[in-house]
Length: 91
Image (cartoon, helix red, strand yellow):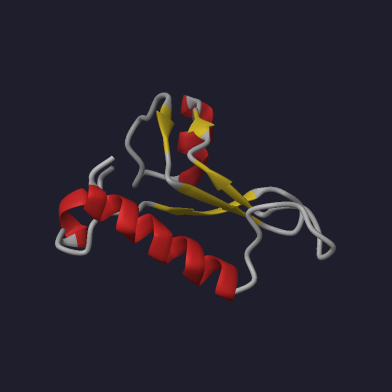
């Protein structure tokens, strides 16, 4: 991983923790952030989201945030600050 992306991940970790997200189980509850989980969506799952999603296969995401029931809520991708976010939006 390039140094700039690693720096971005450290920054994101701190911001998530400051916002109450948990990387580890604690007294408040189970962890609600997964780091680099391997993900796979089936065509049926993608179709259920509508026409705006491309077909996808196995891949990794940087951060997966879970709701209070453990279901996926949001995906975060870490990139160095010098990258234009629109350049990597299809990832």
